[in-house]
Image (cartoon, rainbow, N blue to C red; front, side):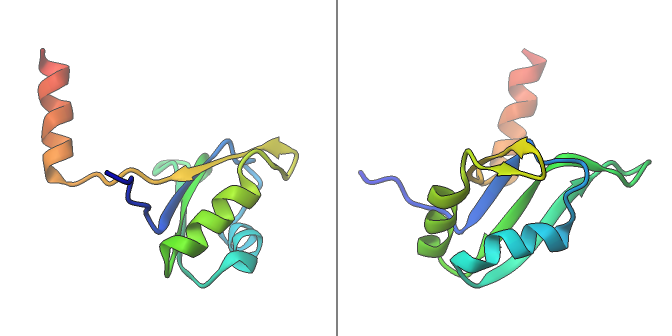
Length: 100
């Protein structure tokens, strides 16, 4: 069975100086972006070094992944991969695994 692609990308190893606007500019040449989320520490509001970019289509996301994975951005080598879906059943599974 073929692996289904996702239209949301996980971007890791980002510089702490990278902004949501900068991420949007970097990824926008590859398609129509629905959402950009840069994950921040709740207490300090500083970026944690990773984020998500959601495209309108899987084809656009795949194009961006192939073009940007392993590139140097703001002085850092970034990794781009398809985001993993994390629904309620996945969260329950991880809690069960942790409890042993």
